[in-house]
Length: 387
Image 1: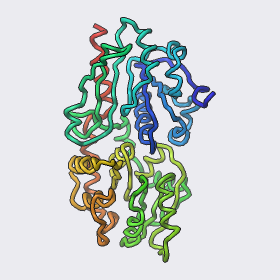
Image 2: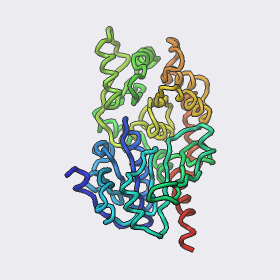
Image 3: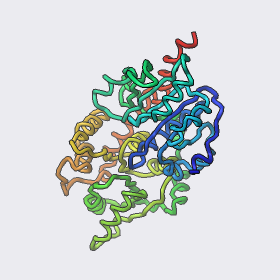
């Protein structure tokens, strides 16, 4: 029996019961987003069954999740969703969330459809990837009728995270707007000490990136900064790349110090972003968390073979009103423009970068967050059945 199957409590629903499905494709961003959504819902009094085909990232991302120690959240093995006996024994959820086009197991849909019969079907959400492109506003909340199979006649709805009020918004837990401004220098020092670090006045820079990032160029620019830099490298692909570069580096200078971090929980990762003067982030989840940190950041978008990521990156930079220096760094970091050796590192232009990052954080924090919008949408879909 697998680890998740040993800890699969059937939790009582308080406000609502949600089934969230997630396939871990690569890089952990998908499970990171789904876990944050599950945790946010649970903190608001809802109950979540999170179905995963690879639960192991939660061992470090959300310690205690696999042992059932997060109130309101049960982690379930994806394979069990195809077991009719397991599914039929569960209380029916009011909401299904099919994340990132993962497609629900056919056996799960069939078992629930048979059990429900003529009863109102669940609100079925197809949670899409985050984008700032125009199609997000056009497609957000559109219905997608189920045309065949045991759920024929039911309806899915697309739900698009985004950066405008006409989209589904961004994941942001209710207390974040209070916790972030209250983060003190004393708390920062305590956090750094918990990682075995001492703040000696260097510019702290975090690095979280995909394979293929121009890490060698980055180290060159950081070594050329006007002030000492301490690079904090996250575990996984970022560490592997930096280690390769350092192994072949000659004449290292003491202007740049490098520390390799352990795997961090989501809470510690957020605190890392708050603690650094500059953050290099990747994918969807860490981009949003960098935005809420209000610190200068450079985003590595997931590269696509057809080059579609260029338009997506440009749309994002437009959405956040990025100044030219920010656009230049993003283009270079994503391999979309030649690397200029004289491009100053962001830590040498802290005033402009900081002003931009804080303004973007404030602006988007004024919009309704994704979970609140999801709850409102679900309530609107369930309302007719309660009249």
